[in-house]
Image (cartoon, rainbow, N blue to C red):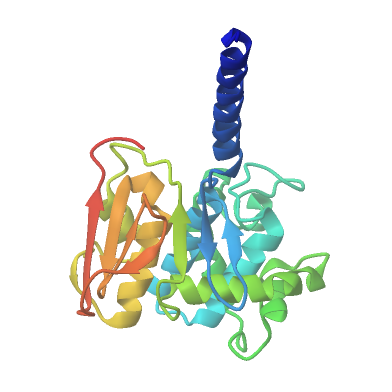
Length: 261
């Protein structure tokens, strides 16, 4: 009995099967990104999550309520898709498409996310009834858009993101398959500018602790963070999930990767 052709056929089938597995793994491998849990899951790119976290952090550091952060996020979602655009309609630029010719600042300033968010909140707070009007109305009094109703479509997403990033929703933001930068930016320096504090470890009040922990996860690629732990729960860049790892204790900690992933 000639076994040569049969053996060859088996080898070919094994090779084809192996290629199929590799292709399936490549197609089904999770893409880098972040997910916000809430009434429904919201998917953000790493870039969008970073900018959303910065917008929320600036508002939170200024003592503004979740409503203000929701207004800012809904505006940025509509105006730029949570991207720091270098241009736009006429001289508009940045997350909020602010116009230097309208007194918002220089092009360099409005494309600085911290400056842009600070400027947005400043104008919002100048409105006497901003806390009592809808997200759409509040966004419009700041932006003076030609499409004032456009912000309404983003309110549900913006509110869920705001609740996650201000710590009202616990462990509600997670990022997966994060391309860590090693060495990353100095986390304490950036935290001091955005969050108003460089204290990123030790005991934290619950809402503030979750706000900082979520900010760290959202910026994990930028800072090269592979682990963030708060109140007995840990997020890792490997799993992309929050898991229970201890007794709730209000303690915050982080770990920076030593090599890129």
